[in-house]
Length: 137
Image (cartoon, rainbow, N blue to C red):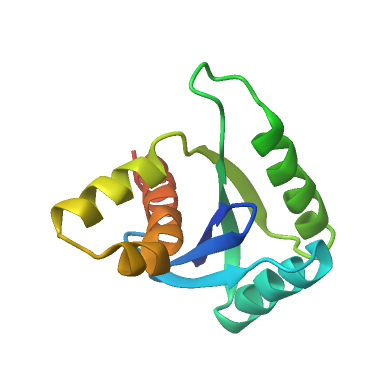
């Protein structure tokens, strides 16, 4: 069984993939957003290509834990995805995933351009890894 992790942003969707044992999450790709239909189709294509049975989606709650505009945008995407994907779809609190990735990249002295290239798919990997660890507990 494989899982896909998604970090859904306004401009890009970071994508991560688990190994078949559901132990490790690996950054996979970044989808540049164009339209809801095209973005969902791109995710569905990755699901089919990698025989994914579950999707872990980062839920961008506000620091207070409230669901704001970002959560509503994410839910719009996942509602459209549910129409084309019958597998398990779960939400993972992602409040600090991007900040965590940025800290790691800065400590690794990654250039601004390099950080921009990888931050979304690394954040998706953090989201997916959180889910995989929670499943094993």
